[in-house]
Length: 85
Image (cartoon, rainbow, N blue to C red; front, side):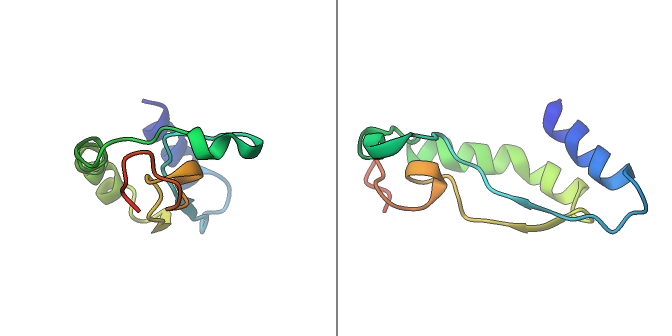
């Protein structure tokens, strides 16, 4: 998949030593639309974290950190449409 391919490219690219910051988000609203942006339910968020766990493990050498993300507009933990904040 595209995520694995991208992480492999970071791992294999250049002289090494590259790291990335992972952050997942369900929406990217523009302007004042963030108040109406829909994020995922807690069940969906937990399902996706579980699905990503093997990828986080497999590419831990190139993932510097995993930001909380997921919740609210831009994954910034505010304005959650599912009252997750």
